[in-house]
Amino acid sequence: MKLFRKKDLLVYLVGFVFALISVSIFYLILKPKKILPIFQPATVNVKLVDSSIQYVSKYHKISPFSLINQNGDTITEQFYNGKIYVADFFFTTCQDICPIMTRNMHILQEKLKNDEEVFLLSHTVMPEIDTVETLKKYSMDYNVNDNKWNLVTGDKEQIYNLARKSYLAAEDVEFKKYDLIHTENFVLIDKESQIRGFYDGTKIDQINLLLDDLEILKNSYK
Image (cartoon, rainbow, N blue to C red; front, side, top):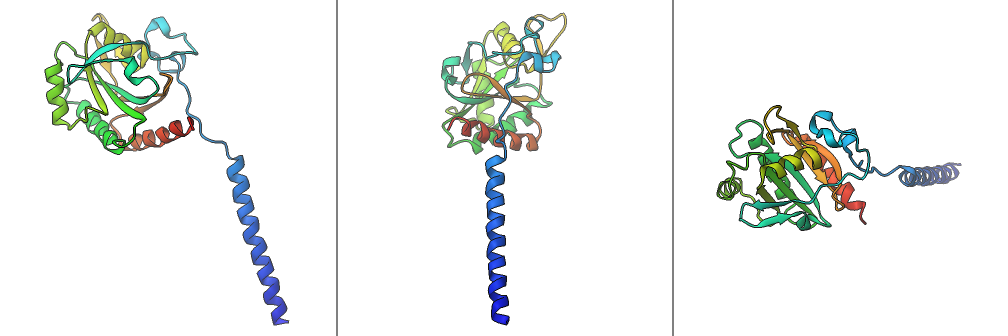
């Protein structure tokens, strides 16, 4: 009788384990994969979007650009074609959120230093002050890896339009043409130049979320 019970118990135990594994596999198969949204001007905070495109609800992409990085090299959208990148806006004399954002962007740089799919791009909103030489000094102060991270300056109107009409990441300054107030947003851009996420660049939990979303985005191309 005892032998029978042991055998019976073993059968039940094996059956339970098999059922548990089957249910887990079934759950994983049926569980929907997380897909990052594609953001459009019509779905973003209206304050961050130029009035000329606030109605746009599909097909939004980052516009072509031509800017100069910390090494004096011309950087265009061609550099980022077929690549994923994280963009933000700052200026070197900012003593408020910019130092925090730059330190957190540096964290991304270090986490992604061996990742050949993902790059970083920081635009100054004060190109009249942030010359190539100024950006170079700033990049050295923050140990910027030139192969991974471009800090760019250039024509103020172009930067204004990129912030308001492409990345949707800055507020307008009323009565001051081409002046703007940048936000703390880090903007995730996919290989098709589409916006896939906004993250508070001053908060480490948002940086971790961005890293998680980067994996989701990269896996979507496999």
